[in-house]
Length: 420
Image 1 (cartoon, one colour):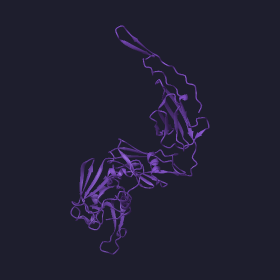
Image 2 (cartoon, helix red, strand yellow; image 1 turned 60 degrees about the vertical axis):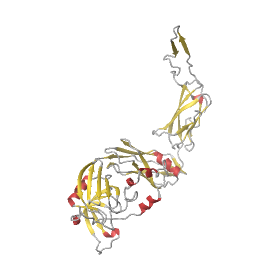
Image 3 (tube, one colour; image 1 turned 180 degrees about the vertical axis):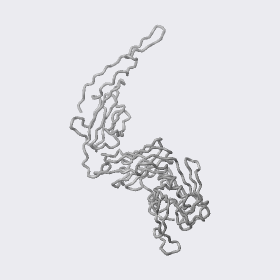
Image 4 (cartoon, helix red, strand yellow; image 1 turned 120 degrees about the horizontal axis):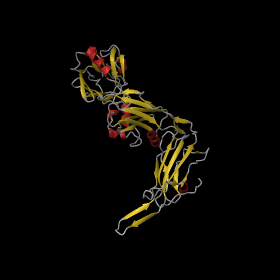
């Protein structure tokens, strides 16, 4: 770019010393040698993006600002018209700044540059430029989940991709662009469940009555070879009270807590030997007033002593493989005393109706002291909370490997349907 002449005022300082040794300084109108209006730093810097009308920068090339030797760069801010900031790195000597995150295609950017000359006087320059449209054939579209609405404190945010992303560097580009914000703010992280799905959860459960928004800054950003980010619809969730249902399979009791206070204790039955209910934290997936449960779905042949084909009411689902909390009027005599189900948590019809009305998707349902396996982290509902926070970080492309561990993948594959 051409250099423009710089016009600025050099402010002199005069030290006045009285006979008594007292001194005052006279430095401009307010006594500060740097109080003058910042000068136009155009001739102090070089910029590698075209700024003329009709000219467009290549979004695949990093943005670069360099000092021409007369002073140094002190700060650079680059942001596009949608509010997306470009990360960058400034050399320690102020000689060069370059972007470290990719530019978006077909975007309008404003760059604000601060400098200072050899005397310490400040300079400023604001530049704008546009990037060219993408010629890449594929777009990486993101769909956030669940559907917008009200949920419990255990509900993770999901991001489904329409294209697989396997490379860690490419995953880092995607992950940096996917934002989840909450009010109040929490510490949270993404976990790559597989090549096409991520889950986001905080370190602890969401705060009661939090508001959560998920947003993608990926549109137009280069992810990989001939692949750029596409559009994504923002997601907003509202979190209700902290509702936790804790089932103790040893005492045959389910205790419901609201914001830490016990609300109700219900006698229940859980899975009998060979069909033990999964231990660990699960999340309410959905509620169904009536579900037909058949033994064939879990490998029990019709006509055998363990077979069943029943209409089940007030069914609160916690796994996709068929584990529910539901009405079980046929086992009322065992509820509170013995475990006789095929893996579900059964209770009286009146108690099941109360539970069904009280809980909502995203609420916590936890089982302790069962002889069953621990709830799968992924693939069978939301077992995310069974992964400790340190291990959760290993599933992030920014803080860990960005690749799910083999044990988690195997657990997700070993779904054991249960019912009644």
